[in-house]
Image (cartoon, rainbow, N blue to C red; front, side, top):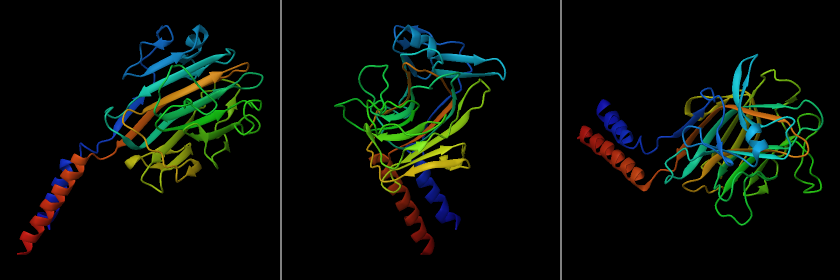
Length: 307
């Protein structure tokens, strides 16, 4: 039996590096602030960038240190500061020449609004991020006329019915969340937000887990609240807010992960923390060839053992 199993694992071991997942982890504990040159930050590690549209945004989009309970987080928008746009671009988790076909992204999200209407938006993105930064739109970071693919999960806190009557969903303090593909709303993904908007800085973050796999049911996206990511990047526990299949997104090499947020006439605090992204690249032709060689080696050894 060992003669059969050993070469099989050897064949698989040859390609393990080619299938290795890329990763990004950030808890913001090593920063006291973010330095800007113009609209772009200069002080984040691992090639990440934070952009703000003006001096007010540079103040709002920054590291926030809370005293009691003690925590640090990236503040994407600030309660009391309007007309800001912030974009946090993590970049390519894989080698920029490698195409990602599945990923799991997790982060802690905390929303606070002291008075008035909360606003305006917060979003997670993966795809072809091109054009000028910072920016943030009702449908995510997709820009008109661009190429490639993009998925954007958008938290919408304000009813801009004069812009698009279909873009807003949600009631009460939770407002709504919706998924966009290439700038278009994906049917069946509008839901009330699983994260409550709080009045104080109690430190009550909600864990958000997002999973996309292009090889499952024509491209499947899972939006989970409160669960955990375990072995094999599987999400367990919490609540699956929605699962959408048949998305057919065709990501390309060099696509990027990003977060964005904006305030308008109304405003709110938006904090993210403990960001963790695991991505799986598409197998290369060379990796598939090595896998085939490993299988042939195992088959040959098996035949010899039977002779």
